[in-house]
Image (cartoon, rainbow, N blue to C red; front, side, top):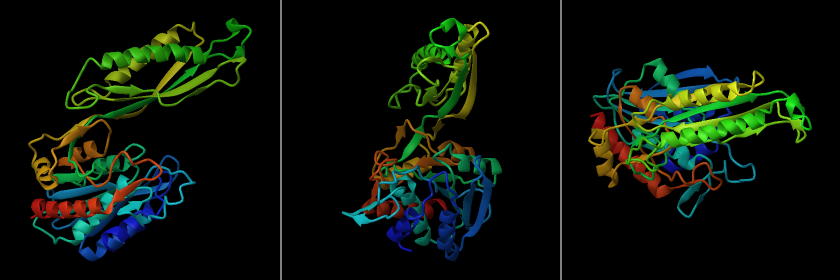
Length: 371
């Protein structure tokens, strides 16, 4: 299929992270098989019992080196009222629908680039992963498998064709406070988990202030950020709350130990639990601890994409599969068509002109790094 019809076909497959991604991999395999790629899948079952898989497509010699184009096949959920989410209409030079920018547009551009080029002396690897949106789980699986070792790599995300050479890490914990229920008219008979959580939240705000002390002016904002994004607890307004649960996330700078804040959170949790006279428990469950990722500005893949795009490389505060790909041994850059500001939203879209420019740049990258 041509570039735009391929993107439309990909968008019409609902690959929300909670669903199997095999239908997307089936379509990509069908496009790549006639192009002389060796195809291999790694499959597993996620924590909810849903089948997931990575597709590794290699053209050229079976060896380390060359170039990898890496993109994730899953998408975030969409509002059921958005009638165009899986329809992929073309209007005003834009393709609309969930995943057009994040990041099925890159997948279509990568396949189009492969179609426009021939096998070289070094391998071209297309790595299409599962579950990036819920923790880069497919990329972690590929890294642990240890069978993909590119010298250079381009990780697809909607960067507006601006090379991204570094980003912050991503860490998260779930905190559960357990107290003792009782009648709210007699506060001494219980121990409020919500009140204890409030004291812990104040301590976490102080931790956030400590994290601001370290700065890296290459980023905006130039410090480790934090957020409590979800909180729930209690049964009724006249019952002393027996439980309260919340999530706490932070985004460490390059060079910072991603578990630094975790140790501070655990210490604060222990202090709050100790104030309860044995009637409070605070459990801190780590969810993610991904370090920041950096590719030097003088790296060949950075300089190449700067020349091709006409844009200087930048850093971003959000996370991608870049750490895992660097872990495979690659000089890697995040790059792709689309605008991150329209991703994860109703009305997501990508410009056809950007898709075409991305496919052309990726094709020249294949010629440059696989020759």
